[in-house]
Structures are given as structure tokens and as C-alpha cells.
Length: 256
View (tube, rainbow, N blue to C red):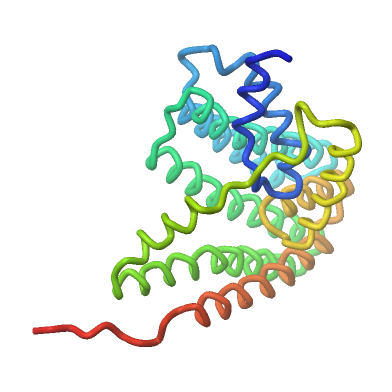
């Protein structure tokens, strides 16, 4: 088997989201097969390209029209491929960094906001109904809450001491093994593909990027915004409740 391809496949995140897992992440590996050896291309530069592509896609959505929506759908998928590429390239070259991870996650959050904000406006322009704008706002707000509650919980736990170390210990104990991919048979890969479909119920970034592109292709923006808003409302509140229940309510004693 090609050693370079094997090394690239090893950089694939085993916790990839639904659409990323079997579409955009493998496509990113295919592109990286050529790009990873181009020295002037860096993971941070790939992150920047992904972000610029996302902004261009939002502009096409705002412009409106069937052709522009199709172009935007393609650009959104390409932006997501680039988003997978930067991490793969960093792991392949063994140059991962906290700052790179930070800017990758930051641009992801901004992309979601501008994509759904532009879709909300486009749906409003079509219907002259303000409801799509409200749905987009609700979805983005509660999607942000899903991540925000995690960091509030970490901050709260840090006030008691030892929480980052505990997280590090837990992460080091959990190491997922490959169950499919290169070196596995057809049956193993088919079973993996079937199991991956349950991730669609998580309604995370990989799911609604697919939903967004599909809605643009069909020009069905408002139904997609309903699905986005309801799913993020549910998961945002559920994640907040879950994180809150995990926090030790005993406050540390402060000695003056």
C-alpha cells in the first residue's frame, strides 16, 4: 500500500462529524495527497483559504437566485474540505499548534454565523417574512451555546483546581482504534458506513453544512432553517443542563 496515503489516512480524525466522516474528510485527504508536499502551503494558510471561501459563499447567498445558490452550495462544501485539510496537513507534518487549533475553531464559528445569517436574509428577501431571520438567529445563538456551556463548565471547574489535568488524564486513557478504512475489507467498511449514519441525529456542524448546501440546491431555505433552529435549541439547552449537572456544587474554601 502507498506509504504516503497510509500516513495521510492516519491523520483523519476518528471523531469526524457525520458528513465529514465519509465525504469531506476523505476528499481532503485526496487533495492533501498533492498539497501536503507544497512547502509554501501551511495549515494556517489553508484555514485562511477556507474562511475566504466561506465569505464568498455567503456573498453568493446574499445575491440570491438559483445559479448563485448552486455556486454557494459548492463553495460551502469546498470550504469544508479545506477545513478538514488544515488539521490533516498539520498532523501529517507534525506541526500542530494550540494557536492553529484556536484560529481553526474561531473561523468555524464565524462561518456558521455568516452562512446562516445570509440564508436568513435570502429567505426573507424571497418571502418578505421576518420569520426566517428569527429562525437563523435562534439556530446560531443556541449552536453557540453548545460550545459556550462547555467552556463555562471548564472555567467553573478550574476555580476548584485540577480540572485541566483531569481532562488531560481522561483524554490520554481514551484512544480509539481504527475499525475501517485502508487495510480493512469491504464488509468492515460497509458496517462502519452504516454505523456512521446515526451521527446525523447529533445535528452538529457536519450535518447542517450538508443541510445548508442541500437546501440551497433545492431553494428550500425556510424548512431548513426550521430544522436548524429546532435542533440547535434542543441541543443547546440539553448541553447546558448536562454540563450543569456535572459540576460539583461544593465551592472551594478560600483562605484569606
